[in-house]
Image (cartoon, rainbow, N blue to C red; front, side, top):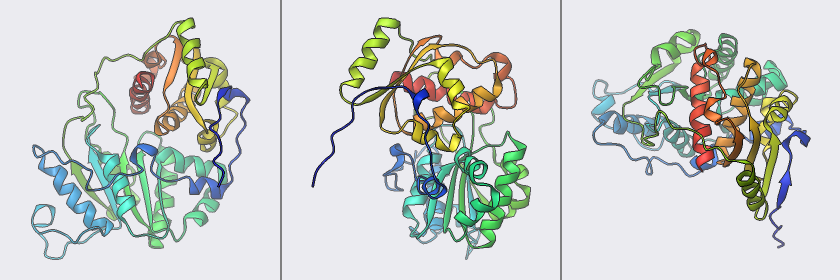
Length: 342
């Protein structure tokens, strides 16, 4: 058996025009690398917050990993009803995505999928609603991480899609986008979630998870900025052992408009590092939202970012942060800071 050598060198993302068939998009819906091995056993419930262990017990029962336990969340019912959907309700950094991935890994299902809300809606945009329904019809489980509550159109499409799938036997597990480092703002979004998906609310059981952010990220942390020489050295060093990308920030942002968000995962395929030169603030919200979707893929792939220009945590101006997409931007800022420090 021949082992192919790791590709090395520098590439430019603006020169990539990835294509992805519907079946490939669906096949790519698996937990991101950092949660590829997430299990209930590796979830460390904090004894100071009993709801974490209670949530773990309920989710184990939901996924079939264990029989329902006595007491705790089940103490009032001899035969607790397990609804077709569970919604993990908690603040940032309490392990919701870990538990969601644990559900995915534990459920003995033939067809199961794990993706972010953006990935599912991008799939609908690329393939059309009915084609997406047919691709997922018959699936045993759909896990939806960071269900977006700030876009009524996308929420309506997803609610309709989930309604059709539940009617055919699909089970659902979801979290929603809670804001990182927002000092408690919107920490629990269950009522917002159930209100926005009102047509599907009765299908979901809320699983509340209290706790503190296990990452303990600084609220005022900044993304790392390099000067020209240090940036060039970082790109050159990364290119000796893998593929490093090197693009002018404005050029990449413009290119993202030419690539469907469902294909961003292919845009960064085989990379070991992402380089961005001359970072500047956004002036167009559509461009900013595309960049958020791109950063989600970069973060999921655990790729470090090296950048020049302004700090990446300052790319979203105050007027954008004060608007309806605040949660998305705050999440992206947190991920940008982490990626430049990786």
